[in-house]
Amino acid sequence: MDKSFFALILLSALLFGCDSKSSNDESFTISPMVSPNATAIVVLGTIQDGGSPHIGCDKECCKSLFDNPDKDRQVVSLGLYDVETKKKYLFEATPDISRQVKALKNFGEESEGEMPDGVFLTHAHIGHYAGLLYLGKEARDAKGISVFAMPKMKEFLQTNGPWSQLVSNANIELIPLENGSPIALSKELKVTPLQVPHRDEYSETVGYKIEGPTKTALFIPDIDKWEKWERDILEEIKTVDYAFVDATFFSGQELNNRDMAEIPHPFILESMAKFDGLSSADKAKVIFIHFNHTNPVIDPTSAESKLVLSKGFRIARIKDVFEL
Image 1: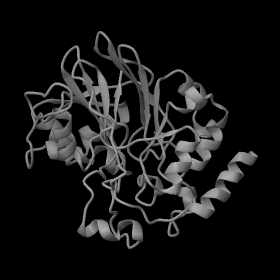
Image 2 (image 1 turned 90 degrees about the horizontal axis):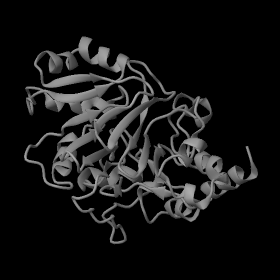
Image 3 (image 1 turned 60 degrees about the horizontal axis):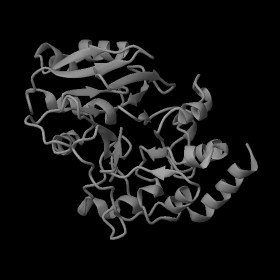
């Protein structure tokens, strides 16, 4: 590890604390909604699978949130609006899908229907696909919503209840994906799954490259350490305009009851050190997302958030909009 990484670790030790303020703090701002004339991505959630407050958490970061929930703390998801077709797509089916689907309906040109035109899944961990249950007969009883899934993910949904009931009842229609093969959503919009290393108990894990009329985004909410990926993340960042990347933990100090070796996400401190050689323009493409409830960057006023911004990187906030 280089000296810059150790310097960041030292600074983290001085700054770190679990206590975090609500994103409804007066200093919290969001990007304005773009014109419905633009194909765009909207951030619909930024939190790791377990949400915030987190089940069983008795730390300061969660205590006040049980009685006073923060509506902006929703599990990680992106929405995609295609201006050419007026269609909308959801990336991830989270436990917060009800609010996220409503927000997507109202994004860009308001949709006539309530449901998205398609859902792209990254993998079979609870925060990324559990929301599919709400498309079933106990809730929406949806009709034929396209769900894009890799081979193992597709097979898992087809052969395991209660997910298989969504298929047999035609609540969803599974659309197969192949690693590295783009899916054309319209003439000027395509999505390509990119397989990444992660804990794959039930499915593969993928990120997505989303290519619009003029700009391209990379979305990798979950991955093991960058060095385990066959692709070079530095080169991937250089080829896109936005890179939404796994930022589950700020540092290894956050969990005192779990073996961090069993949760090998790249810490924000590690990613910043790895990305340090990028140009200022390329650093500005990096948008950290997928925050554990303990992660201090959830609070935009925290010293850790300010550190990330001072290094030239960005932090995803709910309702942020990025034109494609």
